[in-house]
Image (tube, rainbow, N blue to C red):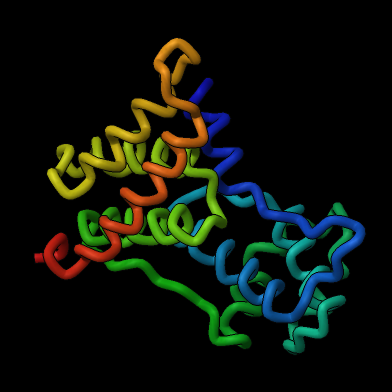
Length: 188
């Protein structure tokens, strides 16, 4: 259950509040994010694809297929994935992970670490994904150990430890930054 909740937290789109207006750049970032999610094998429901299309259209993003995607009705939801890919292609946002499974896992690790480091992904959810979905499949490489360690700490944290959850979260952000800084070494 914890893994499922982490997945929901990690990959739920960050919706702007009613008080903020989504910019075109934010809409493009969301489209790019969803493209990565789907490319890395995460399930993204048609409702999210359509909503992202609608938000992008409202934010002023222009693409020949965007209005079609944004206007899909519930009975037309099965068309959303293909239309979403068409929109990505029109906007130059289509993403293809490496074809080698190990290289794809490493690419996903860097992508998740980047989100942890830039604050767009909750450190507990992100480190959990690295631990559960990547490190295990890669045989727990040394390069991912600090992120896995943070995942264990955040997942099992108790008040009695004498360190705040926020401090452990900051440590996870720092571990993600250090992992990103060592990227060329990790790829060798």
